[in-house]
Length: 450
Ligand code: AMP
Image (cartoon, rainbow, N blue to C red):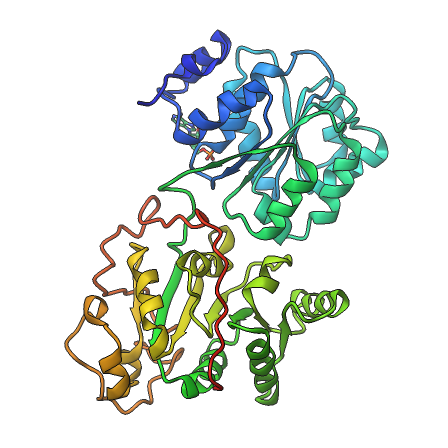
């Protein structure tokens, strides 16, 4: 049963503003987060825009911050648009509280911001760069901040704000509550939370938590020895975006990167056998854009700050479906569209079927449209039954269709999913897949050579 706002411990001033704004009942993230925050807990919420996350932290902040006092709450956001949006939302809710909120972001006159600050403000919503300018100038003093919010933390890290965030943290009293909201929970976010938060409570929304529905997912059943050829074809025809290739083992990551390099691609490998320095250097090159392809193992990807990319290629299928959803979540951050393609060898078809069974989103099978036949011997081993959507089509086809150029090829034309799984509404609020329930480690199996 959904609770009412009154039952969450919010004041009459807030519930009045809520009903005037037409908020009848709390959204799930609000029902979960508000009581925890009011109890004094640190909270990590996996939520994206549209779930009501702003009110989830905004309402308890407004009930705990004292009107007319110094700056007591700081909300860090990645972009000026979000700074404005969050500030507007808090303004609506603050109507009867007397608490003042100001947005601080680059691109706006700093003098105008000085004027607003001088009039007294209790909540600051800021992008990191401009906030640092104010800290350095002494126009914002964070000594009395007791509440710190990191909003859209994954985007802040993707945009390279990690050092700025650490700089700002240095100026905020350690005796504070910290709240972190993020659409995805890559390892670097978890590390950040371990460093800066105390016994944080995690909130995950089941259904609408993470949007993977802007990612075009596809797979191709291939012979192990053909994988590399398909990998390089795909990359050649989709060259514009940065790509991460996931391989099952360190050796494979090295070999794939080396072969890509020999084929004239700019590729670097990253895995646990490299020294920290080598890893930093590989990541530096990749982030800077001088290398377009990162070939990684899951373990390595877990320990580094991998930025969002256009394409994820699963050179090897992970054993654990959660790992698959984590991997593909690297693409299409911040609403951008991405592609994820998996090369499935016959002995991994069963693993891939488990992935297919765990998502309502369409994952296109490319064999038919690319005219790539699966050898008869392998076809018998594999139980495609539930996932094949057209008649038996293996064993025909002469190849020749592209991954990128041809309208029917992967990466071509529109997003015309025709698979049996494409029942979902593709618009906002449509099929969403939550990932990250488990944190299963992939059992890295050795493969025969490719
Ligand atoms: P957010 O995820 O914070 O960007 O919020 C998404 C939208 O939902 C905003 O336009 C809010 O004004 C609205 N909203 C947030 N909470 C509620 C609620 N409990 N009832 C109705 N609308 C809400």
